[in-house]
Image (tube, rainbow, N blue to C red; front, side, top):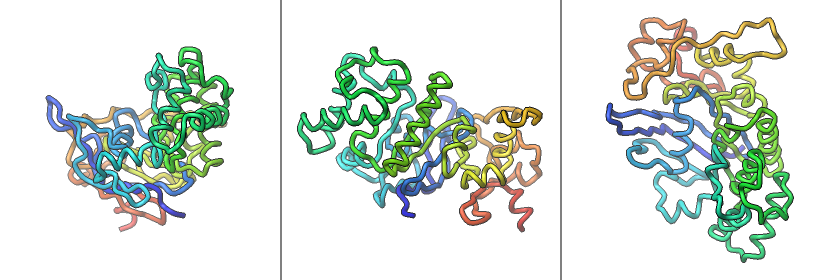
Length: 322
């Protein structure tokens, strides 16, 4: 299976009044063609910063300080502004966290999709209108409603419009950044099901950013787990569910209610994510880890492959396998 996106040793820092915040540090993963990758972790772990770094949307006082991001062999971090304009929408697009903020209230939803098509594809206005209608129908909205304004749609329908807009120029990779936040549970399920169906139908590669572990494990092929700016585990969904190795991954699973087993105890994770300004120069999870030993408090574990396709950054693995 061919690789669409390859992120290698990505680091993104922000200057703050209190010092340098290492929002993302030394993160590596890949996404294959037609694959849905779930990027999960608690709030403040760097998930959205990874997405913004990939899309080259980091602005001052933030900066990508190291690493590379290859999209179909092209290094996005070294692309010129004109090259990026050609790649965005056509090669890579994003479904925003809040369609309410992403859609301009003074333009019809159709005009906003049409604008993206005309800017990035060599088509005329009539062709763009017809494509917009088809896109709206693809996401379950009557194509004739392309003349409607955002305020005429419900929250769930706005999110469907945002999905249609992300697909406007037939991209190879779509990043969905917490795209169901703020929606009710039923609408969330409908939007996520829609994304999954479109991914299969169009053979899209998708990065699904979320803190909703049950949802991610239900639809993603692989899962990458972030903690305090680091990637701590990356494996197939089956491996994460049945053989998670990092203590943080296990803690996330234990903190998730299981409706099929009402007797299973839900165990919360003590403590909180450390400040990204004062990150310890050792294992970042050690203060919350029940298995931490002296080495965890003194050194930083390397991200290593413990078996084919299963990567983890934890000294416990080295101790057990070494």
